[in-house]
Image (cartoon, rainbow, N blue to C red; front, side):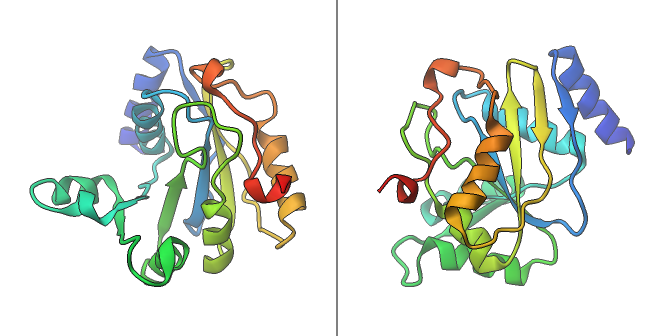
Amino acid sequence: MTIRQRLWRGILRVFGWRLVGSFPEPRRYVVVGGPHTSNWDFPLGMMAARGFGVKISFIGKHTLFRRPFAWFFRWLGGIPIDRSRPGGMVEQTAEAFSTHESLVLVIAPEGTRSATEVWKSGFYYIATAAHVPIIPAAVDAGRREVRLGEPMHLSGDLAADMGLVREFFEGVRGIRPERQGPVRLREEIG
């Protein structure tokens, strides 16, 4: 563990949080982060990534990557996605994996900090198209830990794969639990 990792872990400990798990090599996967219930999830996740010793990336609308803030969002790990471009978000994001030797893409599938009945399924289809595993990551306020699961190699059986994801998030309590919805995709309910 590097000095920087120890520093970030120490900062998290001061705030009462600890890190559980580790990121495997090679570092090419989609991290499914949840539950996303608070504005604190982002800074906590950024500190956790540094404590784990990994540079994370995220996707954002291409319009965020214009002057004067383009450099800032790229520095944070942003990958611009043009939603109006043919090929769609899944294909563009999967393409990013083919151009990066190492890419740890973090997605909050709830897509909002408010309670929602379904998760957005993009993380599943991105990982499938890019042929990379997913790693579930929980911000568990009940245990005061940011926890990583084992890499999940998707089988293509959405119901079975989501069963494993649900199993990981079982009992996890978000920072604002009243905003926490079920772990399921729209494709699973109809």
